[in-house]
Image (cartoon, rainbow, N blue to C red; front, side, top):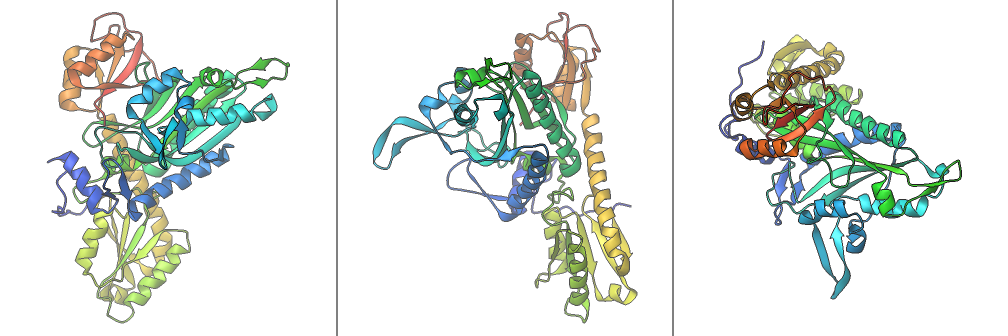
Length: 479
């Protein structure tokens, strides 16, 4: 049975003020701090450690699928940036530009990279000449700068950390397969690492990435019913290749332009973890992404044998490859309980003199507060399965929340109710006209999140205009 949990007064209640709750958790759990420049945050060790777990998981998957890591410069000459018109128009309002180098004005101003398509294209134009040079499957881990008007830690920053993959392929078919394969890598990451179920699909023409032919997205649903775009993959066709004069001689001796993709996720994923799983006591971290998976709390640690046994358990668990912390500081056990609840540590093991007399320890699960008394001899065999159980429970809980907040819409009144009262995703048939997409934005401040892959029609008309509907689309309010 779940234990009754006492509300932590250090943070605002989720259902009192969700935005303030989020900020409180970011600060109190020591994930980040604010710097002296708006939108540029300090990633504190605990927050950065979550990103490192995401990075390690994805880096392994990228390399398994034949991708190589590179690093491109952080600045882009403005003359280079201007080569792809649609791309430039999409990013122009967000660019940070360096105009002075040393004591001299720069003739060709430097764009602090908002994304690196043009840098990769410039490089690919130099190194791709033959079909033998393809595919090129590169990825880089870096930060980018987008001068945002409204910022919020992890969710929308003027600078954020991310990975951006950029690939070139000999055929359109191969590039399209890459685009969807990387979307699946991201979707599986949600299931395997973050315990976050995603809604996936293609973006509308209005919402696609600047310069892309098609954009695909993973969308997470937060506790407050708002969506969060958590990652995207893009099929560029050969537009960038032609703009940057990238060509190769194919097997039939004809000269062709290659087909390009790009794809990325960012530290925005940390925001999704916080808002999908967190509760009134702070973070609730999925076990496989948690920087600390198990915390050992010695009770009356001055008593003979307590610290020694706690250290013995720590060593045994670490030998399994688990991330374990033994807090032997002089803080009270009550303070430690609250601290590691705030930090979302999945499992807490309490080691006290009375327990040792009986040969047991108490294990508490962060996600539901459930406590179990376990024989010390069984701890090493019990903990790994408990971590898997927690992950499965957290994923199931998040999926149930998602599924209960997908509302099938047939009328404008239902759309209003779904977006303003029930919250979550409004799934409806759509005529495909941007005018109706714009109308939903105007009326409800909601945007088209994806055209889901399952396009099974469930109504004949678009609820916005009443005309014949051709597509299934999902709308939501979003961060």
